[in-house]
Length: 102
Image (cartoon, rainbow, N blue to C red; front, side, top):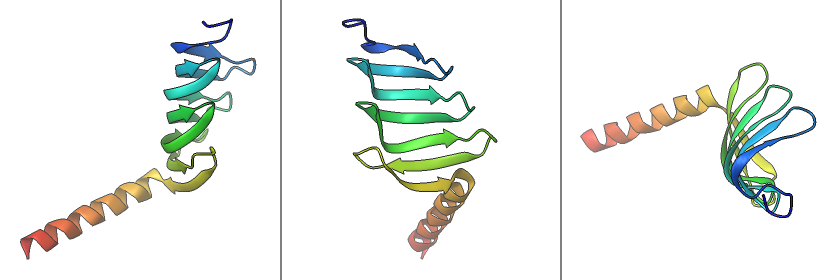
């Protein structure tokens, strides 16, 4: 704790029951962490001053897995269902393998 605010690695339990486990800087989520929302959704990725940035793995309350991408301002700019992403990655890997074999 720094000045009564989370600082460094730890766990923060919010009033609504949500929990953030990970890094904090001056009371804000900062660095790699996992956020368990009260709704049941889970987000795993990197935070910068309480904003999600870069690639995130997400699971919605229904258990559907997503691959999200956030810009530096914390705005989600892309969301792909994980199974669709995995299928695309497999197809790309097959195309590379075919190209190398040719």
